[in-house]
Image 1: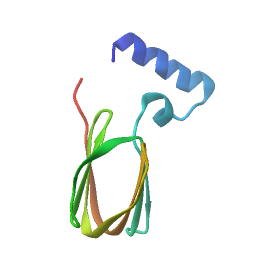
Image 2 (image 1 turned 135 degrees about the vertical axis):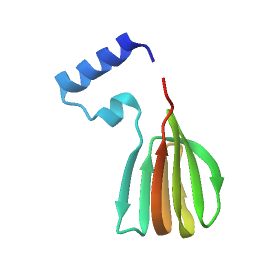
Image 3 (image 1 turned 45 degrees about the vertical axis):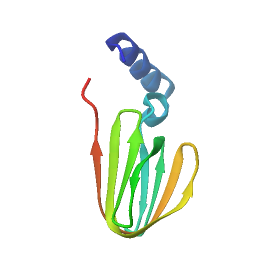
Length: 95
């Protein structure tokens, strides 16, 4: 994304008071008590096992570590994961 486009998007977020995750296509994570994780704005499952979930994002990947992980729901841009969640790692891409 060019610097000009980023500045326009930032101005839009500030001027219109919009959520930045919506404008910049960033992931939104909602963790409920270490047992359920709701992830928005993903681009697909890269790897899944009961211990690890890797999701592709528009800019990087997301890694969820835990035990007994189960994908309860998967939609085009949303995933619901349940199980014991120990850690979440975001690996962004450098521009």
